[in-house]
Length: 303
Ligand code: MG
Image 1: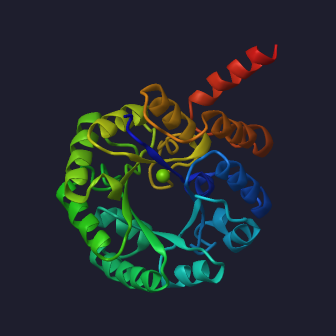
Image 2: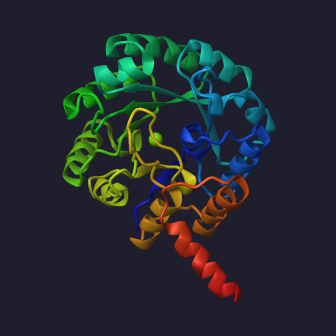
Image 3: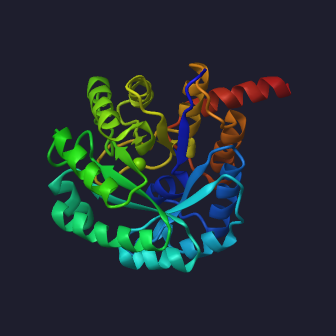
């Protein structure tokens, strides 16, 4: 029996929020509709961060209102705090993602508070989400490298993860935010996280800064990870990491896991069509590799 691999599509949030082009709410809805017909079961549709900080994610209420429920697809929104959670509740979102860093310096730069302050504030937000029967994903950024502190003590990642899961997160997403992770480091970290929490409670969030994202995805799979974040087209980046490339492209991940015989339940052609639409209609391009190959094959079939 082949291994089942799940994907969490972050393109409409983590992808778009780092693009210079601001995509309109109606185009964001179109993008999410295209993704929701690919077979992917989890899609992050936007965030409720103040638009002063992330103007690309203004009007997420409109995006949520424009979406119809799709069977077996969960729509998620990123919320920084109680205020953001209230906005999510206000537009009928049932699945929320919270976030903090694994390192003091990145957390202070990104969130203006210490790790302990973040844990306390997230506990409050997660309690409120839990009492509204919402499911919660918890991102831990800089889990494999920090732009300020360099190497990260993975024991600290596990401790933060343990606390976030105890506080009600359904699963963690371990972020290689700046794409610093090496294959041996990713293998070891993922092995420890899967041992500590179980494969169903850990996702991996890779960036392709060094061209190592797919290699890292493969070693993580060998270490037991079965849940991967991807952004269609490989959009995104990190504002605090010069030269940081985009999120690993969803189509690159799905192609990899299809090629090794895993059970992906996502239609690769449909993901490529969504990626192709972003390039041609929205003028967005990411760091994905597979799309060009797919397009060449389409051209050949058409000729
Ligand atoms: Mg990312």
